[in-house]
Image (tube, rainbow, N blue to C red; front, top):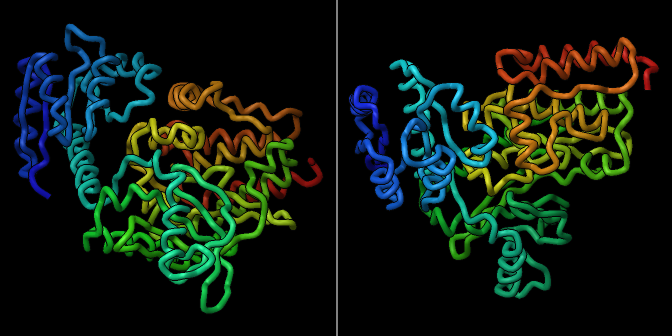
Length: 434
């Protein structure tokens, strides 16, 4: 890609000069700096900047209003805010729904370098096809596209590639899932048609297709008895369709099962242990799942769990989507995902902790009646880990959840083996505590 256009809005002359001079060390950045908020907003509103670095100490406009104005620009820039840590904390409830990274005063060259490097990486990912918007208009469109393909082929059923689409299993901002079958063999599979806006935005460039192939291939390398394996992927050159094909796992989504009440401690722990094993296989393949939530856990007739949507987050670059477009999934995201930070296996661990607690209690351990309020609680509050009853096994569960749901990744279990060992030890102690 070309130069990454960066706008710096900072009134403090010394700080502006320090940041501006440091930015110019990055050859890929083209930097403009202003010291007045209105001038900055006018320039930012042009939609020509990839990154906007803005002081929250500016006069004349509230910090929340400033962020809201910048985040409303299309295409939206990546926003880095500069302020005292206490101001960032005070603004958290008002800015939870706005993507922004934070630089706390005083700024060191090291923290500035880390933040700018991360911002450049995200902008480059956007240019290479890892970012898209307009997902809201996709949910009703994928089936229509399938019907068009069916009409062209003369088939009575919708078809994409070599797959016949049968029953619609579900849908959301990550696309629509159908049960399908391979037309030549009749093997039953699950086919996810990703939002049609994806290719409309990204086009059919080789860079994008090569990137999709790498992401899908990495997901296909994951093999585990509690994973719905990725089998295939594809795109359509003449219509905006992207699809992922996986094993069709049998079972009821955990989210639906919990509508009838929580699981027993033994069943909840068994589910968490199996999903932890599945996640270990995902992490060993070199990526994080990023979408661990009850709707992506299927429980079979024998109580065994299967983790679905492997690789979907990678293809969608889920952590880069505007937050307001995925509010409904936020209650199961880690603080670092919500803060637009680095995501690794410990982020999946936090999400699994949320799933385990909800399986045990039927409720979230973070407060708030709306997704936005839940997000604010995840970012600011300690989890409510009351499980009911007082037994050694339940105290073990509380301790495990406390570690899994630590705010800082370094305070969680360090590695899948450590988490699995803790869950296994608790299962041994659980015994007859149902």
